[in-house]
Length: 136
Image (cartoon, rainbow, N blue to C red; front, side, top):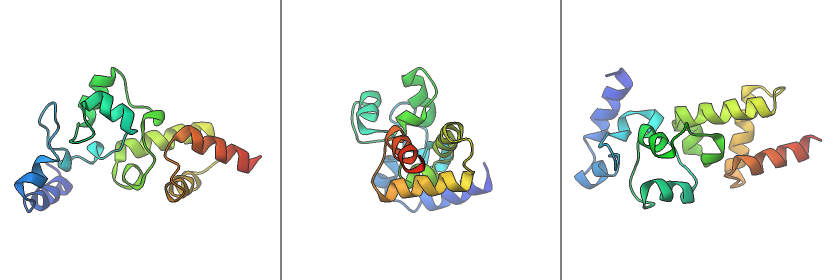
C-alpha cells in the first residue's frame, strides 16, 4: 500500500458506515476510495446502463469489463473530479485532446478543460467543436 493509500485509508475510517459503503464497488467489492483511478464520472446514461442505477460505485476494472473495452474520452463526463482527482480519466482526456489539437500544450488543454467545467460543457465532442470554432 502506498503512502497516499495509507493516508486515504486513515481518512476513510473516519467515515460513517453508510458513507464507507458508498465507496465500495457494486460488482467486485473493491474499496474505490483508495485508488484515484476509480475517481471518475461517466455520462449518466452510460453509467446507468453499466450499473443498473445512478447510485453506487463501480471500480474502473469493472466499468471496462462491462464495457468490453477501455474507457474512451466520449464516455467521460468533463468535470473537476475527472480532471483533478481521476488520474486515469484525466490522462484519457489529455491524450485524446492532444491528438485532436497537436499544437496545444498540456497546460492549454487543461485550461480548456477547466473552462469547459465552468461553462457546463461535459461532452468532449461538444468541447472540440467549440474549440475548433474559436480557433478558426
